[in-house]
Image 1 (cartoon, helix red, strand yellow):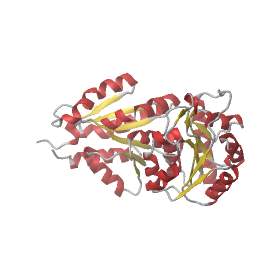
Image 2 (spheres, helix red, strand yellow):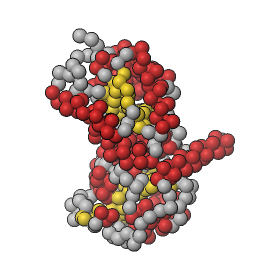
Image 3 (cartoon, chains in turn orange, purple):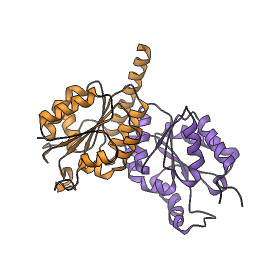
Image 4 (cartoon, rainbow over the protein chains, first blue to last red):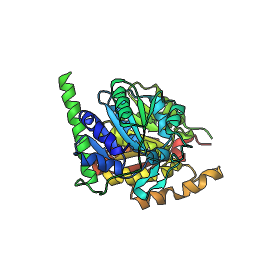
Length: 196
Length: 171
């Protein structure tokens, strides 16, 4: 399966959530479906998308947070899996697209390519309880729906092909993305206070 | 060497007076008492990380969430967090208020701390991170408030270096 197919399937579900994505192909595929202000694209600082998601989830218990991560990024910040497990925010869904490749930098094999390194096993070993590993688009859809319904910290590891978009670029400055993302969250907080 | 109980209390009160409601930290000897106070305080969320670069991401998440957050770390942790500071905080204009235990400087008895201590100020300057030294318990509360305010107005990482004079009991 392709990551782009998974993201396309996920896209309608993301409208009411806060989404943090890693750089490169993953960010581009999400952006190409149509940018929304509830999307934050971490275009550098590899590994920290999961940490940003954790920081959001712990401070915004009434929001649902989705992190779109990759094998290369997760391998750079394995410690956060343990931090997530320790604090276990119920409103965080961590999706890891494992293409076994550092695709954006020339397609070098990552440590997961040979199957020796198993990210789902690492996540479980870190103490995360709701971890699913999926290999098809249908399984991915089921795992994600289950995760969104579950009201608990969930990890979905999706094995995908090492292919990405044929172009890169966004009409969005990085600080602009951060400012708009923060403002949107503040507005949603205000609304929910008025609503409650 | 004993960590100053009185000054740790003053620093924690300074954090509280700055309106801080969220802390990320990696435990370190000089910061130990502060972490104990944070753990016991129902109005403060304490997030203990596995490595300091993680805390840069968590602090960004807290900032987006509208939470008043400070980061507690040793200077060696700051050195380990540099890519996050540069390629998340500085790149996107995300404020960080870092309280950094300055080990390996004047009076340091332990050789393993010394190289990190010697380069810390130079690295802060190279990164363009504004910093101040905190030496005096009578001033540190004010310095924490000012550091936080400046991080927010400049949309930049700032550092307050917690020195031996402040953190240890005099011999």
